[in-house]
Image (cartoon, rainbow, N blue to C red):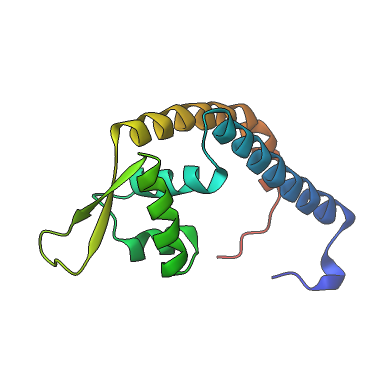
Length: 138
């Protein structure tokens, strides 16, 4: 790790560009979700379910979303009411609730994933330039 005195003006500019890029991407992502009737949080919920191998538990979703269990329960309740997800019993432990996408939820997250992968592909060269000349810390 570099000491504070070793950080160059170019390093600060690269960090600023990276954070600006993240914020712009997140704003763009939120706009995409809103355009199909989802909040950014609902989009992240659907992605956490679709990206998980198998039906995730509420605790597993909470880990993906960096939220507390009770907050995820409330989010899932709203998503169930919106027809985006369904709760299913865990076949091995009936105390555990698992969550599955509905057809509507699956269609929406697939549409967003396609747009996001296209946008990330478009941004690839900008991101690559940010990583150029970084020291290897391994």
